[in-house]
Amino acid sequence: MTKRITLPPLGEHDDDWVTILAWLYSRSRSSQAAALISVGVAEQKAEVESMLEYIAQKRSITVGELVKSILGGTIDDDRDESIEEE
Image (cartoon, rainbow, N blue to C red):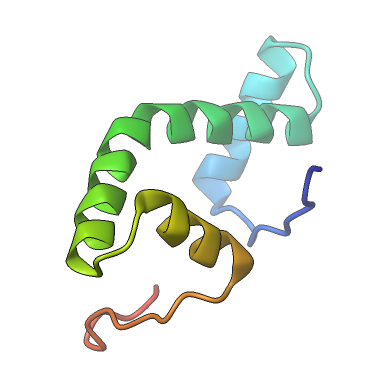
């Protein structure tokens, strides 16, 4: 099951480059954006897995339980309150 997500608008520079890349690869802008996100996720996967293992171990749960609670929106988020989302 694929979830549809809404992303915030890109900055002018990034938006222009997505348009250019979409044209070069004969894709729609949304298909090009999805491809770029997919590549970015793949590049970070090993680091993210390591971070999940650390957090799960610290909370005395399995990585599977951590992932399930993150995806289900039921995670008890006790991260440092001084970190603000940009």
